[in-house]
Image (tube, rainbow, N blue to C red; front, side, top):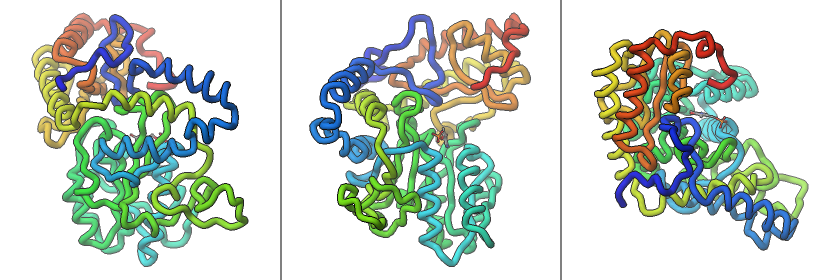
Length: 395
Ligand SMILES: *Cc1c(COP(=O)(O)O)cnc(C)c1O
C-alpha cells in the first residue's frame, strides 16, 4: 500500500507535525472508540466488562499486534505499566539469570530514565552491583565477562544514532551476557527483527511512533524459550498463574503474561488497539524506505537553506533512526518560533532541535514546506524574541 496514509489521521489544519517520535498524533476512529469504551463498555457493562468485553485478554491481544511490528512471535509480548517499569522488570530478570555477575552495561546516549531505573535496581541489590555507562561507540569493547546485562536503546533519542542490534547482541552472548533492547524509538519507526537478533528481552513505549496517546502503556518482550525462566521481580497478582484463586503465595503465570503486574489500563489499551489499525496493510520495510527518503530530503534542504544549523544525526541513513537533529545555539527559541508557525518539532537540552519523520502522514511536500518556515525564521532571526526564550515545563 502506498504511503502516506494521511486519510487515517486527524491532524489539525495548518500544522506540519514533525514530533510523532515523541507523541504520535490521533488516528481516525480513536475518539469514537474511546467514547464507546467509556459509555458502552464501562458505563453499560460495569464489572461484567472484564468478561463480556474481554478486558482481561487485552494486554496479551494488543501485545500480539505489536509483536508483528517488531519481528516477534505470537505470545512473546505483553502490555502494561510504563516503559520505566518495563525496563526495571527486564533488567531485574536479566540480572537473576546471571547470578555470578554484577554489572549492568549501558551507554550515555541512553534515555535517562533507563539509567535511573538501573541505578535504583543496583542500589537495591547492594554490594558489588554496578551500572557501568560508556560512550555509545565504546559499548562493543566494554562487553566483558563481568557484564550480566547489556541494556541499550537502539535509536538514540537525541541524535537518532542507531546501534547495530544484531552485532551487539552477538557480542553480548559471546561474553555470556543477557541482552536487553529498548525499542522506544524503533517500534513503528525502523525494521526490527527480535527473533533474528536473538536478544533475551526488549521493551518499548506506544505513545511515540505507535500513536497510542499520552500515557499509553508499554510493552515487554521475553524470548519465548525463557518465558518460563524469567523471574518477575514485580510479582503482582495479574502476573500470577491463577489470579482469581487468590492464593497466599506468588507463583508466576506461564509465558510472558508473568510480566503483567496489576490491573490493565483498559481505556488506554482500547485506544491503542484502535490506533494500531493504521499499520494494517503497510510493511515496516515500506515505512522505513519512506522515512529514509523524507529524512534525506530534509537534511539536504536544511543544509542548503539554513547554514546556522549543524547536523548532529548520523549522515548515513543506515545508522540513523527515523528522526533528524540539528544543533543550534538558540535552538530552544528557534523551535518555539517554528511551533508558533505550525511546524512542530521539539528541543532537547542543551541545543538540539529534533524532527521526527513519520511517513504514515508526512510527504516530501510537507518536508519542503517545513524547511521554508525554518529558513524564514532563521534568516529573519524571528526566534529572537522574549516570548520564545521562556522555558516551558515540557520541552
Ligand atoms: C520515551 C522513552 C522512555 C519513557 O519512559 P516512560 O516510563 O514511558 O515515561 C524511556 N526510555 C526511552 C529510551 C525512551 O525513549
